[in-house]
Image (cartoon, rainbow, N blue to C red; front, side, top):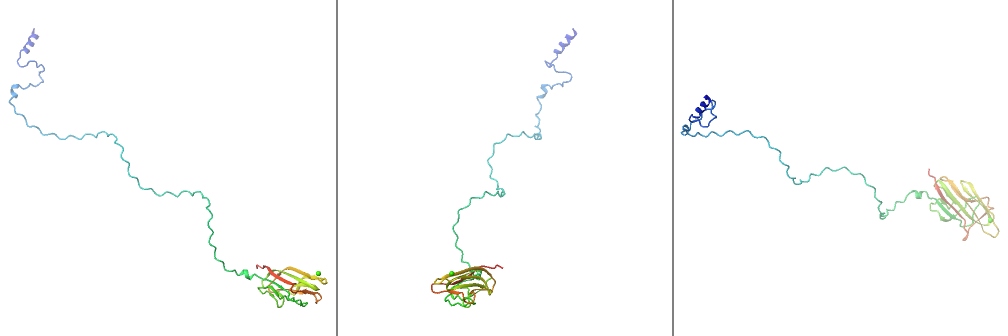
Length: 243
Ligand SMILES: [Ca+2]
């Protein structure tokens, strides 16, 4: 009976209504009748800017850009390997002939030749036969006044003779430096014309002489010549000495 009497007392207190939250720790709200007469306050100053926020995330990839300008030329490269040899070209045109050369000296220096014949049959034994019909004697190494060939160029010489034999036998010799080195004998046949001949190679030193001579004391002196029969004596240098 006592508890029920307390609740009823509370419900009977004015101004409390249903505000059941009221207790000993909660301030008492101002009475409505007292706020109606207060003035509105001055607005406060704006606050300070805040601290900048953190960086945002990376953006999406952009589109591909345009092609750039060409770069500068690079350095010159190394020389390449030698190529394969090509095919030989066609033959060229003939060149202009060169000038005629000067005459050489040795060509004339080493010439020596003669070829002579008998003009009359009057030959004397034991002396050189004088051949005075000159076929060739350009170097004058044969002396027609003595009938002797005079060596001017040391070397090897070729000599030959062809004798017409008439009326008498013939014995002739080729002489070199007063010595007979070659002999030819032909026996005359009556009422005939014979020939006697001989040839030889001789090495001669400068100054040596060669000639043809009737051998003996005149008993075999049938060496003959006339308009249609010749007796000849020939000689020439084959090789000159090289030293
Ligand atoms: Ca004979």
